[in-house]
Image (cartoon, rainbow, N blue to C red; front, top):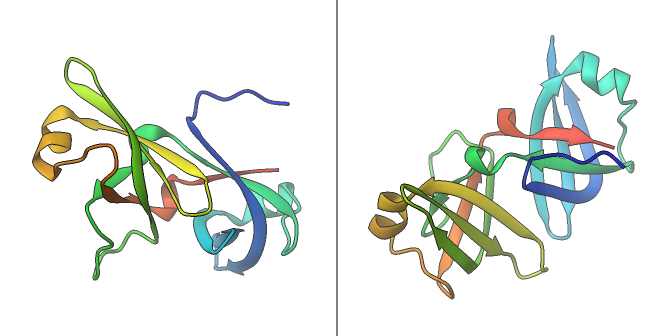
Length: 139
C-alpha cells in the first residue's frame, strides 16, 4: 500500500461522477456524508473510476478550514461536521481533529490565532470545510 504524508485518507464508495469539458466532480459517499473531489477527466479515466467503486478521499491537513457551524452561501463543496476530539497547539500553528457521528476523523492545520478566535476546544462542535479542488482521489 502506498504511504502518503496527507493526514486525511477517508475511505468510501464512489456515488456519482459528473464529467464536464475537462474536469469532473467525483462524489464519494462515506456513511451518511459525501465528499466531492474536482479532478481531471484524464484522472477519472486513468483510475477507471465508476459508481460503486471503493475509493479514498485524500486531503492535506493544510487544506482544511474550520468553522463553528455549517455555513450557508459558501463556494466550498465539502462541509463535514462533528465534535473536536483533539487540539494540539504548536509555536504558531496547531492541529485540530474532529470526529463525525459515524466515527471518521478529519485533521486540519490552522493558526493558533484561529483556534483561539473560534474557541475551538475538545468536546465542542466544529465543521471542517474543504474545497473540492483540494481533494485527491485514490483507489
